[in-house]
Amino acid sequence: MKVFEAIRLSMKDDVARVTLCRPEIRNAVDSVLLKELIEATEILQGADNVHYVILDHEGPVFSAGAHLMEIRDYTAEKNLEKQKKGLRQYQSLAQEFVRRFGNIEQISFAALRDSAYGAGVGIAVPCDFRIMAERAVLNLPESGLGMFLAWGLTPALVHSIGLARSKEMIMLGEDWEATKCAGVGLADRVVERENVESEIQGMIARLRTRSWPAVRMCKRLANAAGALSSLGQLSMAEIELAGEALSGGEVGRRLDEFLARRGR
Image 1 (cartoon, rainbow, N blue to C red):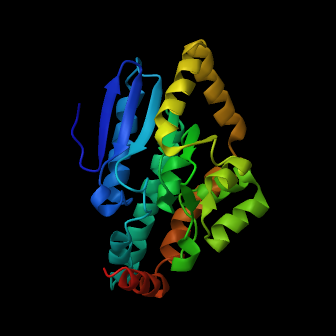
Image 2 (image 1 turned 90 degrees about the vertical axis):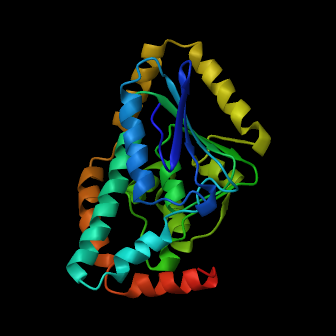
């Protein structure tokens, strides 16, 4: 099995596990992580004997969100056109991950034993099921940093949890506790932290009693039915919007302030 830098990929029987394994940076989402996750999906697509995928993590959080130092490097570029190009490329890479991971043949589970923020939520959303620990939270802090919710996740959230709830989560940037996430469908099961793994294994055991071809087809049909007709257009426009809206100084200033508060 290939050795990655930001993730660990393992397979046992019909289950693959993709583990975010950079706890020293709180599993921050950068270009390295996104590229490796995309590469992992390519491996999974060729693994016909693997029917289930668990997206797991090491450390005290599932993911603290985007690697802000990388984003700051983009916004610090003096040449405005190069700045926009870097932001567009990051956005395109993130969208590619969401598209690929959401459409893998396997049934996927996000093991949210701890909290996820921003881009960390973006990594969990494409999973078919999200199993969340009682004390974990989801938070979308982008608006406080002068950003918008990218990756094609805004239309996905609106379609999934409704317009009003999406606006609340995206604009206010507040912690959403597990029970609230479950109430709107962002979490499928809420259990004690130590029971997240056993809950996932129980769901997999239940799925194994079903016909695998039928389960696989159910996923494909559900994905097709859930797709927004305008999602493709919005996603393409978002790449350009990322270059325009996130460049020019405002995001960089807010990132500097945030990183200064964290002592970075």
